[in-house]
Length: 433
Image (cartoon, rainbow, N blue to C red):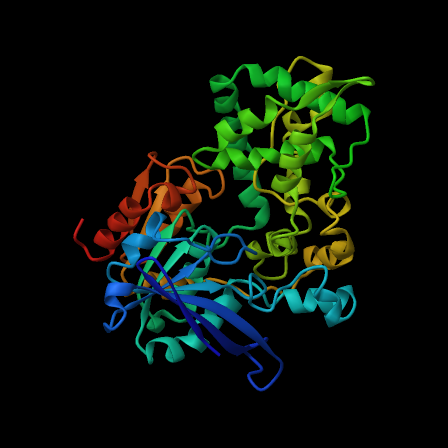
C-alpha cells in the first residue's frame, strides 16, 4: 500500500514491504518494513538513481525531515532517497515493552530480538531493493550504526551497492564489546575535561546535583528513577557538536528554593526525563551491545564490567575527594532496566541477550579486502561514540575505501555539516576529490 503527498519542493511516498523475520527461513514468519520515498518535486518524473539512508542507533527510525534540511537537500539534487525505518523501529513492526509480549516470555523475546542486528537489516534491504529500483544497485548512506550496517552490506551483498557512504560509523571488524568500551572511557573523560574547561562553573553544579542524588531518592514525573549513575549518563550529549552547550544550559537551572530546601526544579526534571527515557527507542538499550556480538563470547554487560577498570567514574569516590564528577557516554548498563519504566518489563530479556553465545559474524574480512564498490567514509578526529583508531584500522582493511578525517565536526557531522559532508563523500567515492 502506498500513499503519496507533498511538502514544499518535495514529493513523498509511504512504502511498505513484507520481509521474512528470519531470512534463512523465507517461508516462515514475516514482518513489515516501512520506508518513506522522497524526490524533489521538479525531478519527480525523472529516472534517478536511488540512495537509501540507514539511520544511526541502533533502534532509531529514519529522520522525519520537514523540507530539505541537513544532508537531505543535497541528496535530493541527484537521487531519489529512501528513508528506511530499520526493523523494529518507527513504523517497521515496532519492538518495545508493549509489543514484545506478543512473542511470549523473555526467552522468546530474546530469540526474536537476536534477528534485529546489522546482518538482518542488510538482508531486508536486499529483499526490498528489486521492488524499489527494479534490481539496479543503489547507494547507501550510513550514519553511525548505519555505517556499521553499510560495512556489513559490503561484506554480505556488495552486488547490491553502487557506492557506500559512511559518516562516523566504521566499526572494528573483530573487536569485542570490551575492546570498544576500553577505548571509549578515556575518550569520554577527555570530552568531560574539555566541557569543564569551557564551563568551569559546571564542576560545582554537577557535584551538587550528584550529592543530592546520592542522599535522596528522586523519581522523575514519568516514573524514571534518577540515580547518580543515570545523571552521569547525560554525558552522552558531549558527543554532539552542540552537546557541551546543551549540557551547560541544563545544569544551570537544576535547583530551585522550596519551603523544604533546595530541590531539583520541575524544568530540570522535565528536560532530563526527555533526554534519559528510552521509550521512543527501546531497541537501543536492548541490542546496543549485541551490535558488537560475534562468535561464542557473550557481551555480558560489557560497559558495566569495563567501567570498574576506570574508578575515576565512581561518583561517590569523586565526591568523597575533591575530584570533578565524570559524566559517561554511549553505554548501556543493567541498572537502566530498573530506572526506566519503558525498560523495566524487558529486564530479563536484556539479561538473556547479554548472555547469548551464538552470534553470527557481521563482517567478512576477505570480501572486504577484495572490495570493488566505491566507498568513502568521514572519520571524526576524536569521535566520542566510535573510536577513531578502530575506524582507521577498518578503513585500511577495506580495499579502495577513501577516508576524510576531520576535526571540523563531532559525531553528528552529517547533520551539522549537511551538504558539505555529503559533497565531500560523493567526491571521494567518485575519485573527484
